[in-house]
Image 1 (cartoon, rainbow, N blue to C red):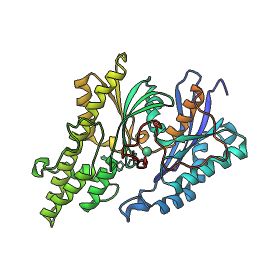
Image 2 (image 1 turned 135 degrees about the horizontal axis):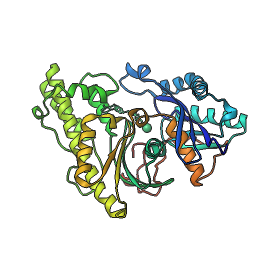
Image 3 (image 1 turned 120 degrees about the horizontal axis):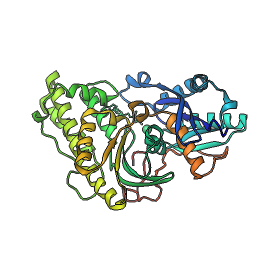
Image 4 (image 1 turned 180 degrees about the horizontal axis):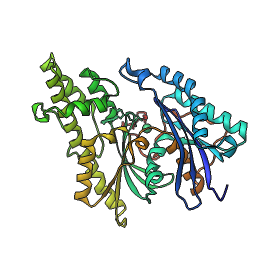
Length: 366
Ligand code: KG4
Ligand code: ZN
């Protein structure tokens, strides 16, 4: 085990991607992704214009064992060659979490290996170390269908949430806008494609939270504004849809850049001794070229380096879950979980942070 490093099997089933991966941490601390298998359920959910939890859970049940087999085969190993299993225990859709956790427990129990219960957000938070061996601390913008957060990643298990959404996640806003305009699911890529032919100036939309002192995000008002603008123009031509998409994307980009700018300043205050501060963008929405360009420009103006891991590892995958387990083991943070571990549909990464909605629940998005 020592000479070839430590090898984890990762399992991810928290939303609509079923994934398994084998990742090793080599003795010099570097990562080796030996396999990374993802089955996207997009086709299963397409007809419904969004993820249907029951369909997702069933698809995980049907696919997961075959994917684990494929991940082991591709890595040229079997369960005997694995040192431990890391599984996403939350946050996410409970049906899917149960499928992954039960499978992880069964493998761990049958093979006598430790089981690590991983917070999905920690997987995203540590991906830049998997792909780029990035040193702590760094600032992370996580923007996906389920999450919209800015997190200072200070060490393994040390995450400080700077900002979160007070309503919709950013990817959700893209998806709902797409649905409203008759574009296919997932909406993000469809909106981005349509926006290329549109004129952002043709529709006036608000820039939610821009200039506000509190650092958080809000997108539900923007979604309503798009609905109003669309209703005014109905029936919509292809050109109208393109203009609405371009205007939506421009509003989102400006709003996110403003919010991130605020957090860059806070990161400087909190970590003034960091010679070359880095902003990492992750999550499916980080694939958006307009957003990436705006963030890269913002970082250049503020003396931050900008880093976005490859799209495949920015979106949901099991390599990041295996890696988070390896990071925990080697940093000596936390313990393997027992067979009684329960899924946690709501599980904030920064457990100390106050709920954003008064005494309300801290949702997966928050
Ligand atoms: O990280 P991800 O694959 O899954 C989770 O939600 O965890 O993110 C999916 C989200 C969807 O909302 C999708 O519409 C959005 O990312 N997305 C995009 C783009 N590609 C995917 N949003 C904007 N522009 C894109 N190019
Ligand atoms: Zn995710």
